[in-house]
Every structure is written in C-alpha cells, then in structure tokens.
Image 1 (tube, one colour):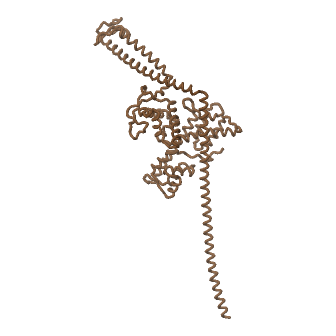
Image 2 (spheres, one colour):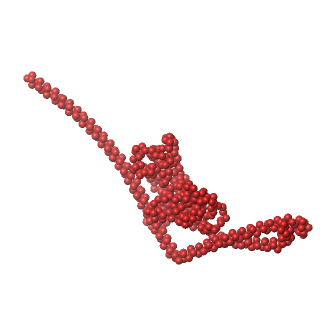
Image 3 (cartoon, rainbow, N blue to C red):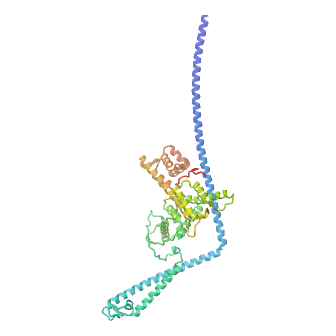
Length: 525
C-alpha cells in the first residue's frame, strides 16, 4: 500500500511539472499572439497609409491627365480657328491681290527711301545757304558804319533791318556784296523751306519702322553704344561701334514679338520638340532674317530691347523681355496663355448650363465674377476687387459680359483694361512667389549655417511653408527639377539625407514655372 502511494505521489509530481511546462508554453503562445496581433495592426496601418498615398498620386495623375487633355483640346481649337481664319482671308482677298499689294508696298518703301535721301540732301543745302546768309549779314553789319550805308532816319547801319541786308552795299574782306546776291540767297532758302515742308507732309502717313532694313536711312534720333562682341554679350547683340536707334512704335514692337514666338514654335516643331532658350533662338531668327549681316542683326536686337523697355507696361512686352533676359522661364508665358484660354472656356460652359446648352456669348456680371473667383483662388481680395472694378467700367452701364470679346486685341495689339490688368496681376503674382520662395531658401540656408548647402528634406519644408496649399506631388516636381534628377531618384536621395548646393538648386528651379497652387475647394459654388 505504501509503495502504491509513493508511486502515485511521483506521478502527481510529474503531472504538476508537465502542467507547469504547459502553462509556460501557453504564456509564450499568448505573448506571441499579442506580438503578432500588434504586427498585423501596424501592417494594416502601413497598408492604409500606402493606399492613401497611392490614391493621392492617382488623383494627381488624373488631374494632370485631365489638364493635359484640356490643353490639347484648346490647342486643337486654336489650330482649327487658325485654319478657318486663313480660309476666310483667302476667300476675302485673293493671293494675286495680296501679292500685288505687297509689291506696291515694296515700291512705296523704295520711293520713301529715295525721298528721305533727297530730303537730307535738301536739308544739307538749306543749312549751308543759311550759314552763308548769316555770314553775309554779319559782314554787312561790320562795314556799314564807315561806308555809304545810312538809312532814311540818318542813323548809321540802316533804319530798317530788312533794307540793311538787301539794299545796302557793304564792303567785306572779299569786296562788295551785291543786293542781288543776297536776294537770290533768300529766295533759294524760301524754296528749300517749302520743299522740306512738302517732304515732311508726304512722309507723315508712312510707317517709319518699315525702314529697319534700309541701311542708307539715317534716323533723326540718337545712336546706341553697343556693348561690344565679348562672350558675356548675347550673340544677337554682339557688335563694335554705334548702332542706329529707330524708336520702334508699340505696334511694330508687338508685331516683332509675335513673329519671334511663331518662328520659335515652328523651329521647335521642325526639330522634333528640341528645347532652346529664347535668347539663343533670337540669334537664329535674326541670322535668317538678315542673312547673317551682324550689323543689322545687332541693330535690330538693340532696337527690340529698347522698345520692350519703353513699352514694359504691356504684358506681352514685359514677359518677352524677362524671358529673353533669363529672368523668367518660358512656361510663365504658357501658363498665361493657358489662363486666357481657360477663362472663356469655363464661362462658355457656365453660359451653356444657364441657357440649356445654347451659349449666348453673354453672362450677367455677378455670375461672371462669381465664377471667376472660383477659378482664381490664389488671388487676394484687393487684386480681385480691382479686377471687378475694371470689368464693371469696361461693361459700363450694361449688365452682361461678352466673355469672348474681353480678350480680343485692337489693331495696335492692345487689349481692354480688364484683360491687361488680369495679365499684369498674373505676372506680378508669379514674380512675387518666385521672390518669396528664393528669399525663404536663402534665409533657411543662413539659419542652418551650412555654407551654401541644404538637405533636400529642408528644401521640402521651405517650399511647403511658403505655399501651404502646394500638394506633395508638386513639391516633388520642384525638388527633382532643382536637384537635376528624376522624381524617384530625387526621393531616394532625400531619404538618404542628401544635400545640394543652394545656388545651383535655385538656378535649376527657376528653369521652370514657379507658381502658387490653387486652393482646391476653397471657394464654394
């Protein structure tokens, strides 16, 4: 009996040990289960965050795709309009008539050049004769006191000023001068004056800018002092010596601007989309225009710069000049043109919605301004109020806005006050954002004390701080452009804590459009 109890006691102890072992294993499994559950929760959180990022990226891709499709549609519309306008021009004026008119213009230009040459010759003769007359008069006055030239009042020197010159014989160092010679000189001077006045009257209706290619023409204005032919001077301005100042008119300046843009677009298309800076293309354009004559190339270039600076208040001139001088990227002009296409399109959609799909070309002023406010979400209230006043003044007492006519140009290339103000504000906002961003990057570099270097992550923070509404995708584009790599490569460098030279980053960053992002959904309909 005692042996059985001892055996049972041993078994009981063994079972207790097994139970303890099972309890330990249970506790381990429980802890492992908790650990796995936490890991699964973290994995689900990571998947959720990744899905949100992917959705955001997909939304950006869709937005960009839609924007591209809209831009392509706008380009197609413009191409069709251009074709229609060409067909209408051909139907209105036959090619034979146009060729005849052009030949007449060429003949008139040649005749005007000859007339100007004759005018300068006559002017030379006039001033020569006038100088001779003055010398004769001076010599008469010096000899009258001792000769027989007393006037009717008995005073020496002649009583009447005209008689003293024409009727009193005077002795000079070369001998006596007859009154007949003086009268003949005066008669010739009067004839020359009449001829000059006639020449001036005949040239008033002629566009003086047409003489830009006439090397023999000498303008009344001053001359440019060229900057020389050094490497620091753009090729289209390289020249040694003075160059004629033509004082180009605003109409001629804008015509040249449009010609250069059109020629550049054709060049890019012919060269399979190759990129070229406007300053470099300017030289290519002028070489072809003036058949490699560097004197005419430089003369045209200096006159273009002069005219662009004089008409800087015009948006077309200001944008062209700043892009030409490297102060703005060409995408700034593309963005402005896109805005001028987008606004009428949006207003037409609004018009169609109001009039059951049949646009009238008119929108009530309040509806137009409300729709415009929803479109231009980054504009300050002060700027928008100025736009509203300009549009109200342009519409005057009318209550409807002819939204397509707002952006049309007159024969001098001018647009209405509303359009000019809208374009000026658009450019000023881009320039202001560019300055704010570059200044903020400089302040960050100075604060960090990194001697001209900044981490990509720090630059991301600066861009996001200057424009709090800028999406991450757009910040990625800015960083990649400034770093000079693709977006994914740039993101990898940022994750590795890579730094970049600030000056080089800013230079590359400015090669593209810098603009505040629209506030999506900031203004309700």
